[in-house]
Length: 368
Ligand SMILES: Cc1cc2nc3c(=O)[nH]c(=O)nc-3n(C[C@H](O)[C@H](O)[C@H](O)COP(=O)(O)O)c2cc1C
Image 1 (cartoon, rainbow, N blue to C red):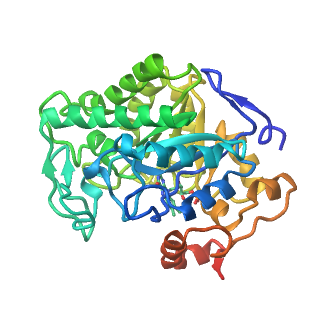
Image 2 (cartoon, rainbow, N blue to C red):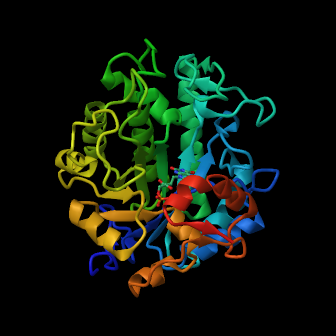
């Protein structure tokens, strides 16, 4: 209990009022011009209440990066005001504001945006019904995308964000570079497992340089990753431990493991019973804090997760159904598991979640 609500200081000095984080969640609700909508502003303000830190929805770094309909973007200076409103909505409630930087790569739904190119490290289709064969990026285009991430991070700095998170999880472009399924390149960005890390490593390096040049020293740099892929070939836990070892040696502020359940074990090797968090912490060895996520819904879950070795915990769905979740957890009250439109949930986000309701019903959620 004490640990959850205790302050936490990052390596570069930023201070969190507690160790609870709003998980990054796409709202599908921007304005038509991809600026932050009124509905989103209201949502962020309400979900920032009590949180130590809020990670925004995946935010596209260029035109080809857009993976979802009505997904906010920080692709150029025209979006500075939109980003400023987003940072302000979060910070006005006392939480630190982190912008999640994203490129969808081959996961983009074809036809969602006019003149969009579906790109990937190599032309290998994703295992999704809707997927099309992506276009392989030229080496020069890979460097352009890296520049786009840097430009968006600079916009985050200018907009008043406290930091950025590189979205290296959930099968999107950073993960596509690390994956032997989607990366068959033979330039500096592909080949050995070390070369498959090059895109992520270069991004991290450029973020650190940007911080040095343009941000205050406390500016937070985080990295989110998914530990495994089910595809064959696909990212294995031993690949991920190499990546994590590499990232933990860099001057970043946190790692964030994207898991469906904070107590997850290997997806690929069902005989391996060791919790993924244990494997990660063995490698990280206190070099950087680790954020956990997935099925964290009550005080017992949080206490157990901290005892397993996470340093901060991110709340997803429970923070959508309960717009007072931090206060309720603090008072050891059962959080509300009924999604209500009038609880400051953007309409499209609410409708999207409602479509998933079978799995959510199993988790005790319902809709009103
Ligand atoms: C509506 C919704 C949108 C999401 N969008 C993102 C996203 O933009 N970026 C991301 O990294 N994860 C995204 N996620 C995954 C969540 O951050 C989180 O990892 C997941 O919901 C598991 O946590 P939970 O069990 O507490 O919900 C999304 C999840 C939901 C429910």
